[in-house]
Image (cartoon, rainbow, N blue to C red; front, side, top):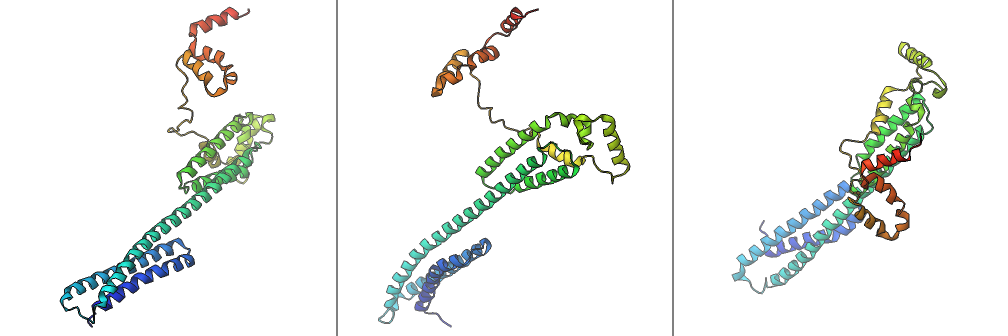
Length: 298
């Protein structure tokens, strides 16, 4: 079969116009991300096919230009139509790419926000489980599991702004748990042995509990070792921890400090700091020690 120039022009135009017309309809119907990506690829392929038909049309047109007569003069009008269609389709293809990018960014942002909210919610649940200073084995195991699962969820947070907010919430939780673990109960063997009222008990009873645990695993009251490691490891600060206040430098001299006090229209609030900083930063150490002994009463 031999295709005429007119046939190729028609095929080119139909391919391009089909791609232009069907895209908005399909975009409304198809919502799934993977299908949308394949849909865009299909239309791009269709557009390329149309472009190939167009090139072949032009080649055939100019290859037979000497025999253009009254029967194919209409080809020039067709050429103008096809060129217009290509200009329109180029704009459509650009919109296709932009729409796909925006849809992808929106989807990624929503997914990142979902994991952000879930991970923070579960981190807070860890504190809720432990804040009453209980030494219940099951509760500590549950807290450790929830903690580890929330940390896994946090790894799926993609947006940088979401990551920064998550790290802030994690930092605050670590400090809340650290304050909790400074309580006297957590320094007692009785607490980890699962003894009720560990502050009012004794070490001998704790050893009895541990011995029973070692001899018969069915007599479990002692806290689970893996859960302790998980929770206390979480409150550690990593070696590469960047302290948020590192950039807040103390003025080098008393004169610089006095200028700092005057900044920000809160001079009266900052003023009481002056005497403290004079002693800690700007006075000679020996002078302070001598003042201590001078004021001492024996």
